[in-house]
Length: 112
Length: 115
Image 1 (cartoon, rainbow over the protein chains, first blue to last red):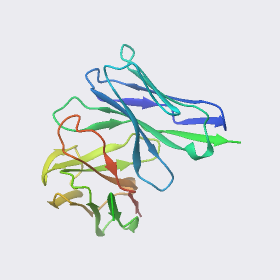
Image 2 (image 1 turned 90 degrees about the vertical axis):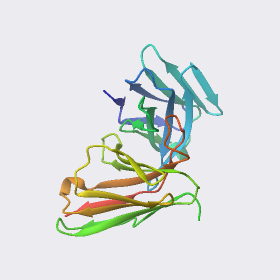
Image 3 (image 1 turned 45 degrees about the vertical axis):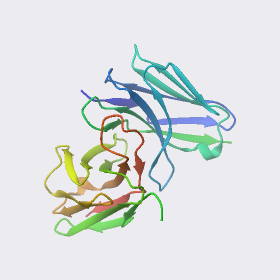
Image 4 (image 1 turned 120 degrees about the vertical axis):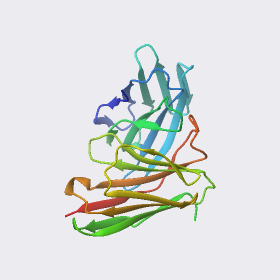
């Protein structure tokens, strides 16, 4: 079935790296996404990776994809207090339309 | 205005009330979505509309009734809700509804509390 799993909480010190992990089930997903939700706001696309890639880097963000294990991770280098938010992993459902299956979100807390 | 706008931002209703949530997108997109966000649970896709036609009804109870009068507006009509329906209801849009159509643009959500 369709299932995306993430741990619910992560706490890091400012300046350290954060790694948020996600597992998914649909091996035919073409794209995998990371969305960010700040307090009181909707979700915003942070980055995505195409399924034929192993890694994608975008400034402080690094996405790693292990298709064999169906594991996706998001690394945030030099984490800042402004990075405090909920991070959602999502996979594109293999059905016929644009259906994204989201995880429950990982709440990242950054402390001094 | 830009993006996806949802009103009201907060709504409190009794179980016998009838209310509606409204979503408007100013992005020229052809697909619109309703998602339900409950604490510590994955986002649940409720409905998908493509060019005003419903293409997905994800086993949602009939007490939730969507309406899409045009490609820019989406409503969620609520009646005889239950306390467990209390959640954040998120509207989203995308360029179209085809598979891998890409990024969803979300509104800020309507926080619903059912007493």
